[in-house]
Amino acid sequence: KMLNNFGIYKDELYFINRGIEVKHFIDATHWKKFFKCEKVIEYGCGRGPRKYAMNTIGINAIGIEKSQYAFEHSFDKDAIKRGDLTDETISFDNCGDLSVGYDVLEHLKYEDLDVAIKNIIASTTKYILISVPFKGTPNCENDSTHIIKEDREWWVKQFTKHKLKEVEVPEYFLYRDQLLIFKK
Image 1 (cartoon, rainbow, N blue to C red):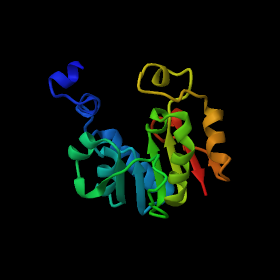
Image 2 (cartoon, helix red, strand yellow):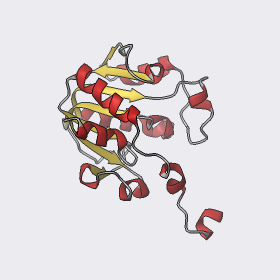
Image 3 (cartoon, one colour):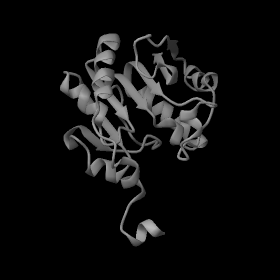
């Protein structure tokens, strides 16, 4: 209620200090090298720092973001579309050779996860990269916006039950301990 009294949106507080950082360019460079990707779709891209970094180094990347605030304050509005990963009617079939869900799935309700995973799978021709904090880690437990709190094996099962093959995460990837890679 207090936020409404001052005209502040919850998303504004969440996204306001999330800018473009060196780590976004490191990620983009690593992803381009490992996945040999030319087109990427990133779900829950926020204001788009990773998408911006990918486009800067020559990957054609688009972002899908639910938050109106993040969309309106994105770093490149031309490469971000408003959309909800849990919407069964969205269609981004085969948009890229890599689909990314970076720090987004843990914010969903359990009952929405399967639709989100199906959308991620449908939008790629080759690879999926997921970043989720695993149960018992500080990144998982210390953020009150995390709804799904499960261990690594549980997350792997959510994707492999869709006939995806898990791929080992390269040693040089940043935040390797919370990343999962799958191949169609």
